Image (tube, rainbow, N blue to C red):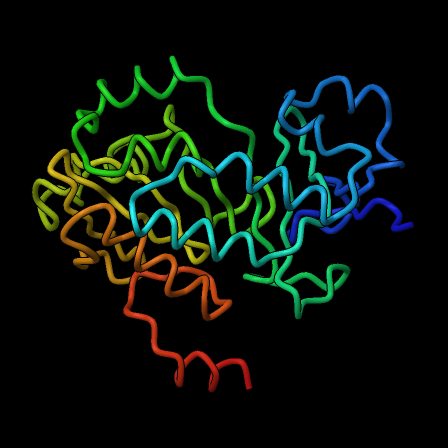
Amino acid sequence: MYEPIEHRRYWQQVEIDAIEYPLLCETIPQGVRDQLHPWLQQFIGLDRDAASALLEERWLGLKEAMLVSLRECLLELIPFSICVRKKEACLVLYIPEAQPLNCTYATSYYVPPPFDDELIEHNLVRCRFADVRGFATFTRNFGGLRETPPNTAGYFRWPNEWRTLMQITEHPPLREKLGHWVDERGIYHTSVGDVVLMKPSGEVAAWNHEMTTIDPVADDFLGFVEHFVQFLRLRYPCEIWEPNEEEINNERE
């Protein structure tokens, strides 16, 4: 039986920021257990095979080809634990070749419980995203998916976090350089701090925070999902540049 795994802020190694409770979650305190979303409570007492079957059940109805590809890639991973940070909690999936107790970027992915339908619908309308092909279905099934522990970069932004680049950066001079993109909304935050933006048309680009430029990423949202899946298959954090397997392998070495 694994003991709980403590995550500490990387800039402040003293403070415990989140705790993972490995399946079967025998060590999870009753008070924490009671506060979990009902979807996560179902995983308590399950071994990894049963947890994988329950996760697959959540995604059975998917039909869009790229969302199916994302589902299949995630189902190749191993359900390992429930990670809890304050009131936020996720199911943690590890890649089969990773060592869970020596986690680094892209060795684990974090699946939150389903969002409330009213929250999703309200923000789809608020942000004019309701007609973006595949986006509503993605948000209902994969919304909030993370590549890193809670409270770190590397995640799909929650519906109430779909804010404009101007609101995210609070840096007025950006408008002069980036034009209308400062008014588009962030849907994904990379692990290195870049922000992926989407227009109501579905076109996707990214704010490169180091170069303070806008870089094209995909013609539509499902194209961005394909981009994300390519990195997932390479076991590397999603970036705004085109994935290159040779370069990624060289960087690992």
